[in-house]
Image (cartoon, rainbow, N blue to C red; front, top):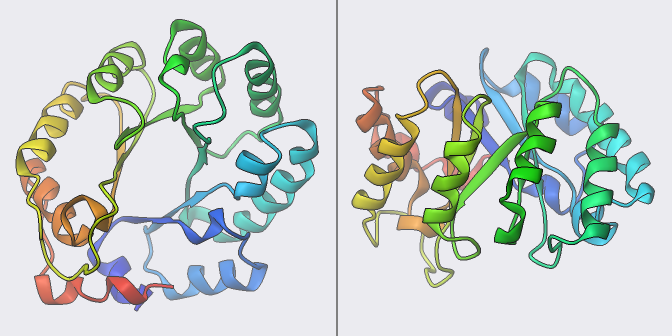
Length: 239
């Protein structure tokens, strides 16, 4: 069903790569099954971000993952470096972060998600901007929206990666179960303040109960065409 999904939407965030790096044949299959112009955003494996915590031992693991991912060619979107809440803003982690970012290859895009608000300071913004690393802002439980919005005001020269999460208390994901229209409108207004920069926006089913319908709400606000609700129900069997 990836082929149909890629006809409807522009991009997808691949969560499964966080748990294990896809094989080369898997990346090749995704490339062949998806439409021209479609982009795959890939989560860095947790071995790199959570287990090795960006220390030097993670470098060869990351290099192997990035090499495989390059098989997506022009369909390769930004990589998401999602850090653990335990990756706190201290001197040791700052050193590991800086050194890890220096190993990342040119010609690929990377976004970094912090789950400790103490990272959202001028030092971090300078380190990211100097390397062309995007910030990933998250509507979720870890960092408040006001703090994210202040960070976006500081990092307004490079693209932005946005993730809409939600409480893990839903057990069915077939329709909108808790509407979040005002929240989506608030984020849309903020993103509209950045007309010179692209924003890559991804929704979890946990936000409202049915991520494709949440995407439709944002697309409506942006004046972009939406997909038929029946077609959206393919989303559970993408991979």
